Structure formats: C-alpha cells, structure tokens
Length: 387
Image (cartoon, rainbow, N blue to C red; front, top):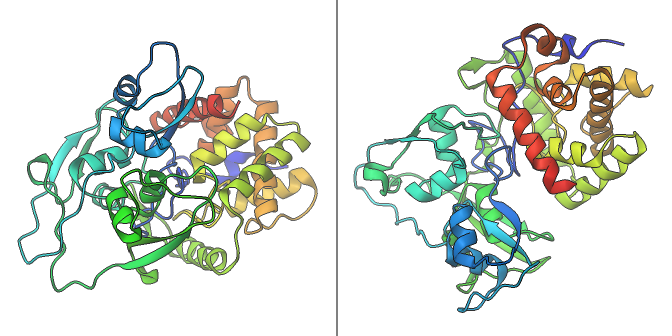
C-alpha cells in the first residue's frame, strides 16, 4: 500500500473542479457549485424572517428569491419553509448586444467575506468564465477574502464586456432540467446569465422551469474551446499530463455520464457500503466537481471525485481490484476508499480532509497550506448541508 504522498508532491497539488463546473482556463462552463462559488443555497425560514432579510443575509435580492421559489408579489413565506436562495445572479442584468465600441477597461475588485465568483460576475455584468480566465483561477473558481481580482470588461464597476462585431457569435447549448435545478444555477454552470436564459426560452418573470424541460443556453463556447489548459494559478503542467487529461475529457464527453442526482445517489450508497460518513463523501464531491462526472482538471484529476491516476492506483490497492476512474461507479469507489483510509489514519477529521487535497504526508510534514485550510473549511461547511 502506498502513501497518498506518493501521488502528489509539494507545490503540485491537483486542480479540482468545482460547484457544476467544467474546466478552468479552457471551458466557458464553470460550475456554480464548485467549491466556494456555488450559485444557490437552501435556507430554512425561521421565526421573524422575511424574504428581504433572507436575501440581504445571503447576498441575494428579493426578486431573485421570489423567482427561484415561485413566490407571488407578496413574497409570503412561512416558518419551516425551505427556500432556494440564488447567490450567483440577481436575475435582472441583461448583457448588451455586440457593438464595435471599444472594450471597457478592466476593473479591480477586492474579495469580501461571503463573495463568490458567480456573485461578483453578476454584480459587474461579466461572466464566471471571464473572471476565471482573467485571474488564472482553477476550475473550482476558488477565491479568498482580501484577494484582488481583475474584472474584465468592467469599467467603473458596472460596465459589461463588449464582444467585437467581427467575432463569431458563441454557440448555444441545450440543457435538460434536473430535479432541484434553478435558472440561476444553470446560468452559473454554463457561464451565462439568468436574463439570457430567460430571453432565449421565453420564460416569464419568475423564470419558472420544470423537471425534464429542455432549455436553450445561449453564449456557450463552441466545442473547440472545451479542452484542458496547461496552466492554472501560475502553475504549468507537463505536456504528457495535459495530453492525458484531454484524452480523458474527450472520453467522458463522448459517453453518457449519469446526472448529478444519480452521482449523489452513488456516493451515498458507496459511502455507506465502505463505512464512510455520507455527508463527508458528498461534501468532498460537491467541493471537487459539484457532482459533475464529465470534468477533468489540468492535473488530470478525473470525474466526480477528481481522482488523479496515481491516486486511482492506490485506491485500487485499497479495494483489491483495478478501478477505472472514467467509470462513474469506480470513480466514486476510488474517492470513498481514499477518504476511508485518510479518516482511519488521520488524528482528526480536518486533517483527513486536508489529506485528500494536499496529500497526507505533505500535511504531516508541512502542515496545511493556506489554500488547504480554505478547502477544509469549505468541505466542513458543505457537510452541514448533507448531514
């Protein structure tokens, strides 16, 4: 049995994908669930709460909460009611048509506690993908309080990025609505806006959608752009690693991957079978990929649990058979088996979670790096949602 430290070296921690995301620096679609950039929160109404209070508390708007929950103009809610609170878009910003006007200068923005890339993009009239690319963020769109971001095409804090008139119009994608999804979450996942999806599909002001409905998602990059980049966060990966990642991404895109709901069910069942807390396994998967199996990072971390091949071989040793990380079931088994080993051998849960991200030996030798501490905090926060 090898140590997880053999799978990752210091300074070369893998780039995991986030809350419903595709690839950093390459794909326009970035999951809103990713790690700290998820687009929706579930809130249970407490005594004395109003929609206005809830919207303010979670950095949303009354209109967005009303739309996400189909509330009428009175915005009536009751104690104990569970509300979906979109935090990725106000639902009212509309991007202007392409013109030949000069592209607005980029602005800078200092991240505040509670900010997400999706929320910042909506506030400045740009997209998650544009901010990810401009700042070299990984595919989880991870940010931290106090960080200074470049906001492309955001002159004066409110301008939106203009597309040159000679540029080819972005292709549209289609999306089948799954249980629990909102227009806000779908927009954030594909790097577009609520307003654009509403307009493209003739939705009413509530942006009401139903399970099984097929939506046109405008402004999605053409297929040629959905490849794995070679760098992220200033780190360049070997050509062989990037080539393998692109091959794995192509294989996943060519296969029929399970829905997010199906992946969640697989994670729960596998965690229970292996004696791992399902809330922990779900939280890690949500942090890593937003339950999206069709993602691969520049470091060749694969699928829902974002397992790199060397870690996959270690997981295979743990379970006593070869695991195919492209296979949804095996991918989940690999991640859960690694979590089980880490939990059993770590002095506490935070250290075990850190080991999944940084490597157990590196954590023991160096302590948690700053980004690892944030990762652990995010996962533990997610665990409360899945408990």
